[in-house]
Image (cartoon, rainbow, N blue to C red):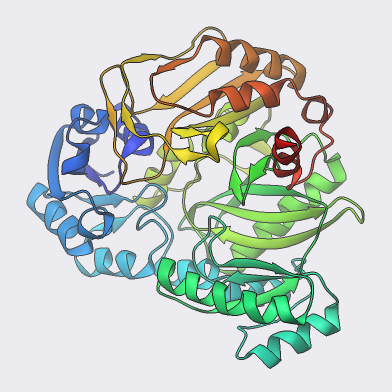
Amino acid sequence: MFSRILIANRGEIAVRIIRAAREMGISSVAVYSTADKNSAHVRLADQAICIGPPPSSESYLNIPRIISAAEVANVDAIHPGYGFLSENSHFAEVCRSCKIEFIGPSVESMAMLGGKVSCKQIAIKNKVPTSPGSKGKIESEEDAIKIAREIGYPVIVKASAGGGGRGMRVAHNDIALASGLKSAMAEAQGAFGDATVYVEKFIEHARHIEVQVIGDQHGNVLHLGERDCTMQRRHQKLIEESPSPALNDKQREEVCGAAVRLCKAAGYYSAGTVEFLFDIASKQFYLMEVNTRVQVEHPVTELVTGIDIVKTQIRVAAGEKLGFSQKDVKHSGHAIEVRINAEDPARGFIPSPGRIAQFDPPGGPGVRMDTHCYSGYTVPPNYDSMIAKLIVHKPTRDEAIATLRRALAEFRVEPIKTTIPLHAMLMNNGNFIRSEVDIHFVERLLESKKS
């Protein structure tokens, strides 16, 4: 087992990893930018090293500075968390060349599954359902239009690299596709340094279902069940829950089996998530992508299975076998997570950085809070706006919703604006309560509130 690990990240995920490491008897080293010098992860780590000024390119995305910090601190391994360098195969390769373990999948499987085009090709070979569309990258506008006419509009252009809704455009005709193709490629190049895109059939009424997988370096790959991430805005998840209220046991077995099949084909180990669109009309699943890292919403699965995903990641990276089999994975109750962002929903979700004078998180039975914030903390304007994750776990979905309503009513973050009121509204929405939603539900609801 490792004796010392560096966390190449910030915020609540850095805190989460530090806590797991401490419980395992592993020393932790935090890295931070000057904007994060007062963040909780800096205070909680056994050692903290400043790696540069606020811009991510000069700190959290700066591979030489992170490796230098790791060498100065004499660590055995680096945990990348999520975002930043977590799915960067070059960073994983640099770690390997420096004899530092990367707490994540192999460079090879990350490259195979991290690129959506290569991932789709592996999926097709292994009978994992994929959306109709291009089998490889789009080479030209004419190529895109030909494929779109064959499968029928509407279609969606997607960037092969990255995620978070960037490099994606929906088109309903040739003209919109030509325009969307150019803008998607430009956005993908700027965001991920890779302009590769592909085209798929756009499913207008779908749910977002993802499967948590975990594998070791001895060939074992298991699933920990599914999460439903249908409640989202502009491809950004707002609410995640497990199990999905939309699936029956047969559908659950189908999608989880497909996820394991895909990851086994790629020789995958560590934690990962295979994401699918579930066509509400046809009841068919279609592969979206694989996230070769721990997810923001991993606590939902931890609560319903009792399995600590971060600790398991660390053990697997150290070469240990999984300490359980598929039949050992049991699910209990229902868990829901909401992401609390420093944004103002009333003003188009513009970021709301600044000093938090009052930070009073909720508690009580069935409530978990993952955060790096506290009263007196200043939210910097330089990074993602998420400041906390509020997760509840109860025997039934109805009880979980009731607990989440209560917890949101207790939660006080002042004076900055947050998405707490939005989540409180959604927890009282009849469509959400009945689970009669699709991935565009929140956007339609917010538009209706304006009129």
